[in-house]
Length: 257
Image (cartoon, rainbow, N blue to C red; front, side, top):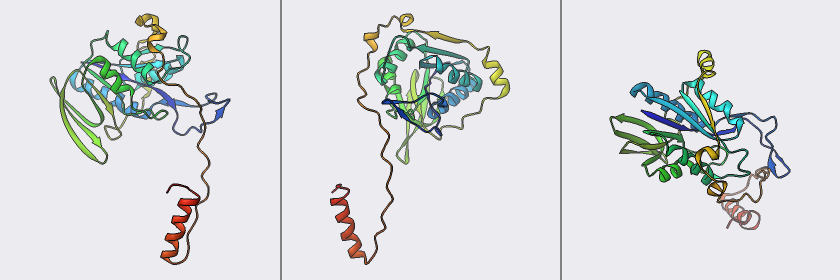
């Protein structure tokens, strides 16, 4: 079985974000595999171990993403591919990433593609479904369970506190939700083996893609931090007077009603 995982490099969840000259400052910041993508990597490894085949992790970005790809290899993935757009694109969005990934995957023999449900930086959850649409294959999002029996796949997905069971077929793309599994930590032997595993680097030219074909469909106008939260206000007195004061505050100060 040919299994591919779409992987993104994101800020460490403990990292404090700062803005400099209208841009997010990356100097000295720690980066990790997007946490939802870790569930995808773990599930891919488990599927391979159960059904045979090979796991390839793929990322779009700059050379810095090599570290996260090596981490996925240390977890147990077999191969990695970095599609380096650093020299070709000044800016890309979800359309760009999906277009590049789909163009690469069209040339591969794909049985199963796994991705994270969302990236913790952008949080749009667009890339996985966009890739599936361009490949013209089924996709199921926010999955918490995956069972494969031959070419038939039974998927359980999270639907806002409840679950939905879907039966579909391969080839298939799924996006991983928290609860799908417990991602493993790279072991020391895994880290040593990862150094010898193949990590191929491609550019847009290698995919026969022009810059205008993957030009972003969106534009970032401004980046800013949310305002600091002010201290809350405790209402006192009889319940009726508290309700009246609350309504007044919501109307005159918060201006939400």
